[in-house]
Length: 192
Image (cartoon, rainbow, N blue to C red):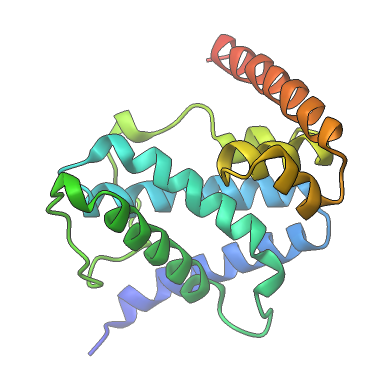
C-alpha cells in the first residue's frame, strides 16, 4: 500500500512538470527551459543510483533523455500523466545504453523499483552547463543540423533529406552551431 506521504510529492511534481511542459509546447521558451532544468535534476539522481559502476556515463544519459523528450514531445498526450511518459523514455534510453555497453560487463540494475523522481545526488553530478538548455539558444537550423549529425549520427546527406535543408545548410549549421555552443559554454563557465 502506498502511503499518502509518498504520493503527494509525486503529484506535486507531476503538476509542476506538466504545467511547465505544456507551456513549453505552447512556445513559452522560459518555462520549457525551466522544465528541462527540473527534469535534468531528477534524471541525474535516477541514473546515478542505477549506474553505480559507470557514473561517468550519467551525464551522457541525461542528455540523451532530454533530447529524446524534446524530439518526441509531439507524441505526448496532454490528458495523460506526464511522469510515466518521461519515465518510459528514461528507461528505454537506459536499456539502450546497457545494450550498447554489454561487452563492458556493467553490473547495473534493470530493476524498476528505483524511482525516477529522486533528487539526492552527489554535488559532482550537478552540471553547470546542460547541453539541451544551451542548444535551445541556437537558431532552429543550427540545432537541427547538430542533433541530426552529431547526436543522432546521420550523414550530412541523410540529415539534409530528413530536415529538408540542403547539404551545405547542414554543414554550415553544424559549423556555426558548434561555434556558438563553444561560446555559450565558455560564457557559462565565466559566470560560475
